[in-house]
Amino acid sequence: MGLFDSVLGTVLGNATSGGAESPMAQALQGLLQQHGGVGGLIGQLSQGGLAQQVQSWVGPGQNVAVTAEQIIEALGHGKVGEIAQQLGVDHQQAGALLAQVLPQLINHLTPNGQLPAGGAQMPSSDVLGAALGKLFGGAS
Image 1: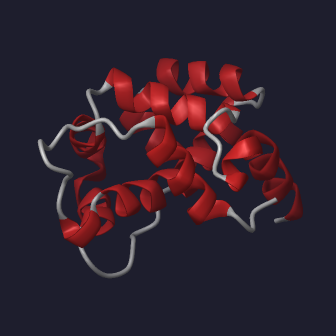
Image 2: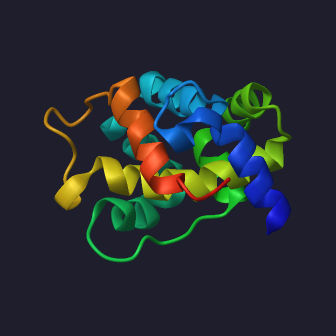
C-alpha cells in the first residue's frame, strides 16, 4: 500500500499540518459546498446506495468500509472525474481516495452521532483542514 500512501500524502499536502490549501482539502470543501454541507453530502451518498455505510460513519461504532466503485456510483462519474482532475490522479485513484477519506471525515464532522447544528452546516476551511490534519497526520 506504499504507492497509495504516497498518492494520499501528495494530495493531502498542507492538510497534514492543519492547512486547508491542499488539493484534497479543496476537493472536499467543493464537494461539501456542492451538496450544501455535511447533511447534503450524507443525503447524496445515502441516495446513491450507501445508506447503511453512511449510517455507520455518522453513528457510534466501527465505520463500514466502501469501495472506490461504490463512491463513484454514489457521487457520479462526472463529479469524481472533476475531483480526479483537481487532484491530478486518475478516476479510480480519486474514487479510492474518497472511499478512504469520506468515512473518517463524515465520522469526524458528526460528533456524538449527530449532524452539526443546522444539519447542513458547512465546516469552515479551518475546521476542514484541522479534521484532515488530525485524521491523516501520519499519512505522508
